[in-house]
Image 1 (cartoon, rainbow, N blue to C red):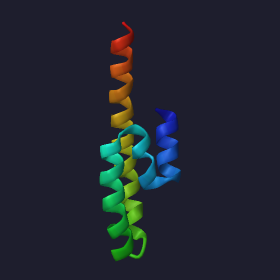
Image 2 (image 1 turned 180 degrees about the vertical axis):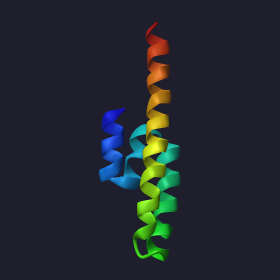
Image 3 (image 1 turned 90 degrees about the vertical axis):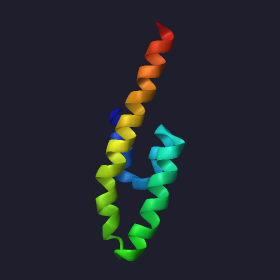
Image 4 (image 1 turned 90 degrees about the horizontal axis):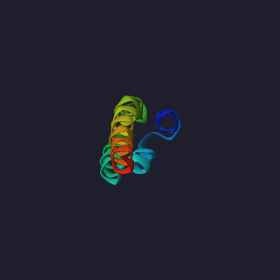
Length: 70
């Protein structure tokens, strides 16, 4: 979880691919136009969104893995 949060802060729209493909596609498609139309300031708005999305996806995946091993 910590790795996902730290990587998301440093590599904003790319890390949700690590946690979920859907999350990565959505954040990447949203981040590119937002960054272009706001001269890059929109990316600052996407960082918390990406952190939350990555944390939720990682938590969901971890719960599935723990559930499988029991």
